[in-house]
Image (cartoon, rainbow, N blue to C red; front, side, top):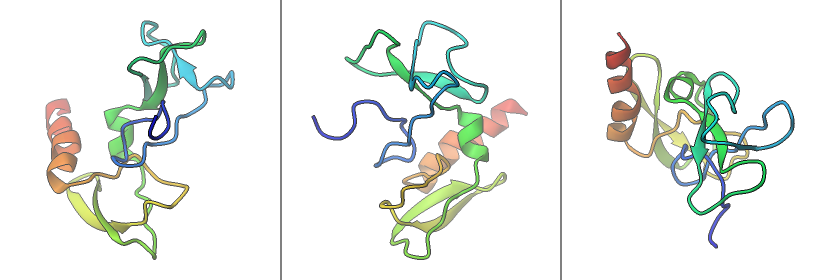
Length: 122
């Protein structure tokens, strides 16, 4: 297997750290509505299931798009983040251990994920 079996989809290319619900269990049940804290949703893993669940808690679209961007002075990879109004370019270091889900591989991905979603919520 390449990479961790259960990670969140953002930022694309590294897998966002899973969050741990209050009981310390990183897994959630995709069939239960409230198996993740507010602002997070259960993302079902393909071909992975434990007795605790079949997915992991990941930031919702609204949570991801409103998170602070984590920039690095040593950033070398061009990425995009949503600043609440528009998608903005920044330099990112994928080796950073702390990162934000507000980190997109292209301007188009940022726009389709955040800008278009914000228009629909108005």
